[in-house]
Length: 367
Image (cartoon, rainbow, N blue to C red):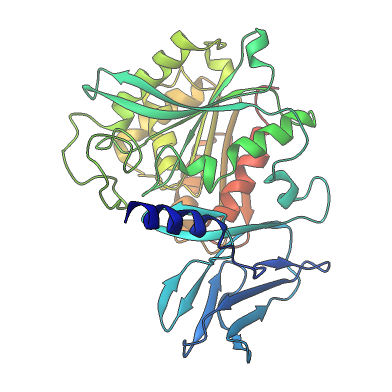
């Protein structure tokens, strides 16, 4: 029995799917293929055009070819008779909260979005999963830390604190966000300063990503783990992260060399943390941010802008569900005469925008 089980496992390793999917063509169109001879309907659903029907061939292979696509990282999955199925021919996939999707990248040349999100032949930084003590939350927590190429050779570096959105964790910006690839490529081209990037877990009730701490293999939600109730908020505990980074990395530990930014919930965190510690960050980036707009925050904003941040940067998509929230906030900033920069893009509350915002924001820092 042991012998037959071992043989089956070895055979499975070499039982390679011989379909090519996705196939990226010379004109940047993409063909998807799935062998499902017994299926009645098969669709492909992705961020390149919604959900579309695939066509079944006599060989039981379903196919669909897109129109030429713009340079970008795309995600997709199949629906087989209404059931979500990953592409067995594509080993590249990302987790988004509690579901997985396959990914592929389109690039037409150096410096386009697809190239920026790819691993290219440039010097690479290191990405580490780091446990740190949080006295405020009375626990140990995990974060992801990017150090740029050349860090081990000495010197001190500015720091960006990069925060995820609802349902995310310390893995979101390095998988869906391609943060390490973006920073590697920008730094290699001289478009961004070498910098440390800290990506913490913004869920105060979760010490780490699902399956990576003592709560085990629970199903993640938009609010992290539902139990236990944290003893403090993420914003209140944020100074624990900064203290650990300054004590354990070669940082330039002053306001002029610190930035904080984030998407959605992380943008709201960036808003609140930069208010709570107005002397800590010279650069603030709100990416499709949920801004609380509380009356109690307005004196804090007055103090923050009195200290003249080097850059207060707001970006959002035209169809984002938080667009009106951001509009009200910008109207308040305008009324008070607080300086900021505003970027408005197409599309809505999606990673395509947030990767783009990080690419642009990183080039504005520490100069």
